[in-house]
Image (cartoon, rainbow, N blue to C red; front, side, top):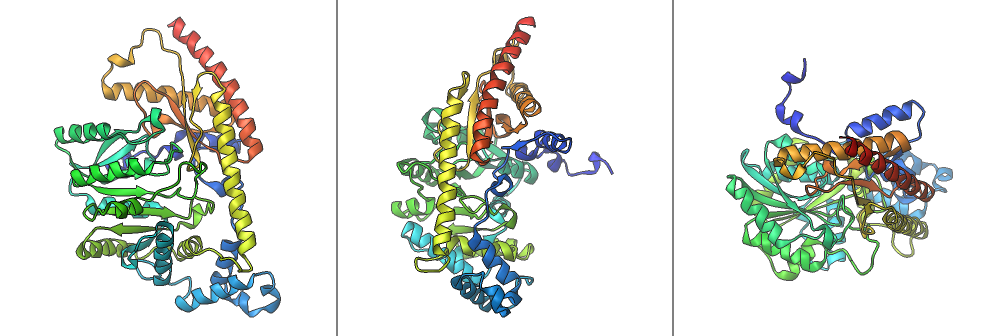
Length: 479
């Protein structure tokens, strides 16, 4: 078998955060080079410690025999033991058995309570589904809304490559809209209208808009007014909204609080725009990426539509049980007075304070490097750094066709990031892997590594960028 035997849609799909630069990084690491992996939001791989509460709870529900040994139990807080017993009572078949397709009912009830507490709005447990991370829920909605190869999904540029890769894999159409970098990456209504009209001219039937808030890769947080504009735009154009809100706990500026699409939609009294909201245990302060847990909440769809969603989920049977329990731990954490509460709060607040400090260090220090531009991230765990490259003598990208120019500029930022890896051991993702405006160059980096590594990383960035642009400028002159 060779590539000609494979699905061409699979061959077309690309997932930049695990692309050829990462493959090269892994090879270099095997050869003994120290690599700082800043390519993916994988907190525990970058030395973030798991929360004790979650791991203790998982230990007891996965191996209930521990609760039959008084000496062993002394190492577990009483509230966690009681919670484990409650879970096993609600899920008597155990962790190795399939659950309902939508997930364990008591966990879905806890998710509904979490949303009601967060937003102060009523939430229907019959519209909540537990998923293997947010990704599976997003792919479920894409599958459900896809009519044919002219079905379009509006996605932000820059975007998280899950979206472009899924669109290619499913054979749909990607309808790009540019985020406004000069206005902290907010959405612009005229840009949305332009993007939608351009798609219509090509015969694309656009059915939904994806919004990532807080932003990946941008690290930005949308204002309530911006969210209202998006909801009105969607209502006017009969679009569903996919609200990727997995970074909602990663907020580092009190002046820019998180507003869920559900809460803003409820405030507006909007009852006609279908809304699919996603949350995950992989991000926030939990960082439980490998446990693959999350949920999807659905609003403004009929019972018949939701039945089809459940059917689609049932084809994959159910989400994994450990991820479901970790999701329960996320939405129903220890309460004041619980024995585990103080340690939980200490670990949570420590992680978030550390991320905030690292975001500020990264933003402030990178901005000092001539030719690098970044707004200090106010959310999520990434920075989308703009960098300048000297013009190439005799080459005029502005005269190229759109596809040719994108390919040319992607080659340039990929070369930059590959050489950065080879010379410094820093692994980042080229901006072209997320999308960027023609004539601009970016890379995405996380600020997850430990503080001492972040400081060393910034210093290496400065030295590398100065040397690279100087040599690139000389090469351009020689041409």
